[in-house]
Length: 227
Length: 227
DNA sequence: TAGATTGTTAATCGATTAACAATC
DNA sequence: TAGATTGTTAATCGATTAACAATC
Image (tube, rainbow over all chains, first blue to last red; front, side):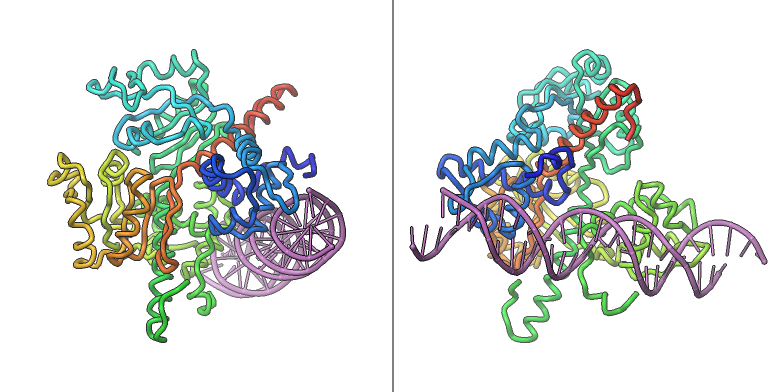
C-alpha cells in the first residue's frame, strides 16, 4: 500500500465492515492458518473484491493463491482500529442500558476498557455490576482529571445528557460515546459518537416495507419471495 | 420529484440522516411554522444542500424564501420511513438490554410498537417491564402465528440468537432486529437489521486517535486543537 | 504446470457539492 | 422591490466494481 495513505482516515464504509471481518476471523483463528477474500466475502455476504480493498487499508499484504494469514489479518485490523491497546473509559448512568453495556462481552478486546460506572442512585453506589464498581457522580470530575480517562460512555436519561457531557469535557475527556437520544453540543475538539437506535429502526422499517412490497409482487406473479 | 423515483429505495446515507432531522423537527413543531434547509443544516452540522437533497427524497416541496412547513416535513419524513403506522413487534430476551429497550422512549412514534416480551426466566415471566408483559418463551411461536407479528427484537445471549431467529422465521416473522453480536443465517426473504455496537466503537476509536494525533500536531505548532 | 488468488489499474456508479435560474 | 431560499441541472468526488497481469 502507498505509505502516504497511512495518515488518511479509513473511509466510513470500510470502517463499518472491519469489525465484522474481525469477528469472523477471531472465530477462525483456531481452525485455519490462512483465509481468502473470497471466503470472507461469502461468509459475510460481501463482494470479494470489496473485502480485498478493505484489507488493503490495513496495510497487510496477502499471498496470491494462498490468501491472508488469519492471525496476521486479525492483528492488522486490530492495529488499524486501534484496538490492540484498549482505552480506559468511564460509564455514566448505571440504569438498565448502562448495566447492559457493563455486561457486554469483549469490549476489552475491542479497544474499550470500562474502568468504573457512575450514578446518583444511593442504592446503586458501592455495588458492583458485572465486576465494575458504581461510584457516586460527585467523584466523577475529580477521577477523570486524576486518572486521565479520555472516554465517557453516556447512558443517562436524555434530559441529563447535555449537562453530563459538559462536565466530562470540562474535566478533560476527549471522546463521548453517547447513547442518549439527543444531539450534544460540545467543543469541536471533542469527539462524539452517537449510538442512535432510531437510525437502525429507520433502516429496518425501510428494508421491511421494501421486502413486503416485493414479496407481494412476486406472490402475484406466482413466485416465491426471494431476494 | 420525479414520480418514477417513488419506488427506488432511499439511499442509505439519506436514511441515516432522516431520523435526525425528524428528531429536531419534532422539537421545533411547537415553536415555528416553517424551517429552512439552512437552519436544519446548521443545527445538525450538515450541509444545507445535502439537507435539501434528502428532503427531496420524501417528495415534499418547499417554498422559495420561506422554506418548508415544519408540520408537513415531519409528516413527510414519517411517511417515508413508514413510521406513521407503527408495526407490532415481539422482544425476545428480557435481560438488561431487553429491559433498556422496553423502556426506550418513543419507539411507538418511530414505527415500532413492542407488544410483549418473552423470556425463559421463571422469575420474570408474568411480570411487566415498562408496561410490557413478559411471557414464557413457549408461547412465542404460537403467538407470532396467531397475531401475525412480523418483527422480532433479539436481545438474547449470542449463543441462543441463531436458534431463536430460526424459530422466529419458522413462525412467520419477516424482520429481525438483532442485538446479539453474531451473524444470523436466515432465508433471503427475511430482513435482518444488526445493531452492532462494535461498529460504533470502531468509529469512536478511529475518530479519537485521529483527533489526538491532530491535537498533538497542533500543540507542537503552538495552536489550539480545533477541528 | 495449471489454477486460484492476490495487487494494481481502469471503469462505473452514486452521493455530495456547486452553480444558477425560478420565485415567494 | 431585493434578498433569501427553493428546485434543477451540472461538476466533482469517492466508493464500488471490473479487468487483468503477477505469482505462489
